[in-house]
Amino acid sequence: MASYGINIKIKGTLDELKPRVIQALKEQGFGVLTEIDVQKTMKQRLGVDYKPYLILGACNPGFAHRALSADEEIGLLLPCNVVLRQDEDGVFISIQDPEVMFSVLDDELKKSMFGFPQEVKQHLNAALQALKN
Image 1 (cartoon, rainbow, N blue to C red):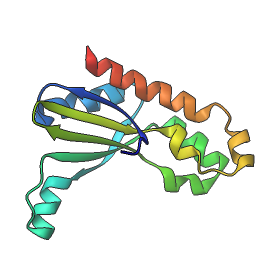
Image 2: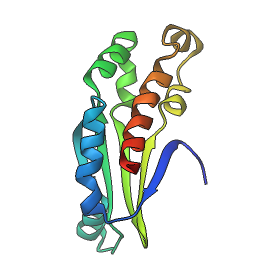
Image 3: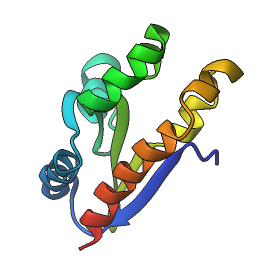
């Protein structure tokens, strides 16, 4: 399986963990702008039963401003997707890895944004670590 996210698994249900995930992101300066209920969408649009699965679009306004100031096309990489996926014995929480996402930038832009994806990743990792406690 490809690895383009940073991940943890926590015991509990998606409904129990969703507010904790949102709070952990908030503590790192991220708000949730969008929410896609994949289970509900699959049922409504395709008549397919699917496990509980949410995609949250998280954004830190300061980071977004810095990124968009460097190149407005970076908006195509925003917001940062956070996936909550129910499993038999817990919930997988995955956040897209900013280093992987920013790897698509051209070399000049990468140089001008040196250290930025690592800084964002540090905050996202802190949110995940807070969920372990």
